[in-house]
Image (tube, rainbow, N blue to C red; front, side, top):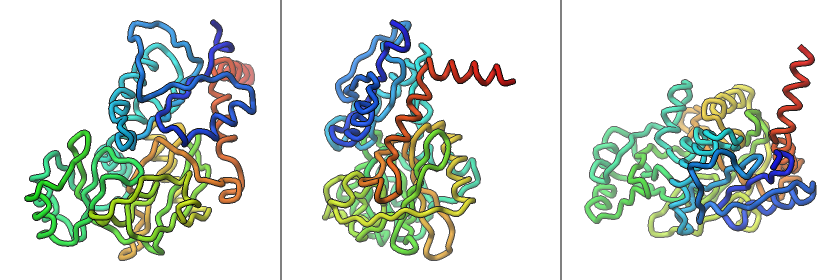
Amino acid sequence: MSHLQKPIGIYFEHPEWFKPLFAELDRRGLPYEKIDAAHHLFNPSEKESRYSLVVNRMSSSAYLRGHGQGIFHTAGYATHLERIGTRIINGSAATAIETNKARQLSLFESLGLKYPASRVINHASRAVDAARELRFPVVVKVNIGGSGAGIIRFDTLEGLQAAVDANQIDLGIDQTALVQEYVTPRGGHIHRVETLDGKFLYAMKVYTTGESFNLCPAEICQIPEEQSAEFCLTEAPKKGIQVEAFTPPAEVVAAVERIVAAAKIDVGGIEYLIDDRTGDVLFYDINALSNFVADAVNVVGFDPYARFVDYLESQLPATAAATAQRELAAV
């Protein structure tokens, strides 16, 4: 089977988020196969993939839909594909960053970028010790979250201690969490910068009601007793979430491009806010899964899925080889 005959593999778990991607692939007549990331198997002894290219669209919020096993399985599958020479969009390195907020903070630190003051714990009993080193309010944020899930705000040390004593602190599926200073975002919004092929694609301001972290991508405020339903920017207009396009400062775009390069993210979003107290730019989340904003043409002026499929076509083995030959001939 030649590379030209092989389909693109779309490895995904969420049943709704990628319909625009499938529609764009259908429109172009590109052969592709849907791969169910939640119920998957692979043969580690195979020498060649049945796919010309695999697009990794696994979500860190999969455990909210009973598919947490897919998160851990994906790391092995991505490593396998890379070993046998199959191009994977958002491969093992990107997966490792996407699924580990502690690694994300380490990456910010390595690049000299600011982020909310944080401590990392692996047992709820250490949450109070961690919080004593920080300024209240604080949030406890699970290491593998997604869509703002698993974030609880505490305004006092006593409130956090009571939650610990009552065994109400859940550290998530890998039993690791951040204890992090809550930062009031200037203007009542956060910023999400989307990237493709290592470059700035578009950016949005996302305004929230301040009543829940369960927004994608906004992490603003969580009331523990009032968990709202998980959703993402693909549903923002239906949920009354205001989003608007904007162009970040050049230094922010440069920082975002440094982040995705270091994380080896082919397509993804970086989130930051402006600290209302200091005016500092604080980065706080790296997303190797980007669903793009709903009604993108009206919000950002173009269809990001069309750009994404342009990129996928450029990464197909036959296309990439032809491009490399042209570049060599031009030297």
